[in-house]
Length: 99
Figure (spheres, rainbow, N blue to C red):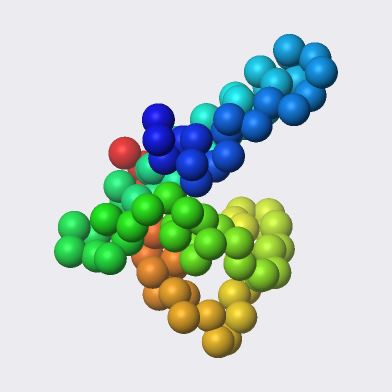
């Protein structure tokens, strides 16, 4: 719960309608679940396995890249100077594998 509130700012319920605040909390919970799943997909001896959620969010999610939707796949082009390119590709490959 602490990571949910601290790193995703889910305690901000500034809208006047309860339904808007509830929807905001649902979105924050989905973001938490996504980051927690990404951390779980990292190799056991990886830095990412023990990283805090805000570290994962800033290093892996908040990246400028080009996304192209093709007929059979989604193509992602990352900047050439992006330091975590191999980690990002490894996590994407692990996430794409069926359970």
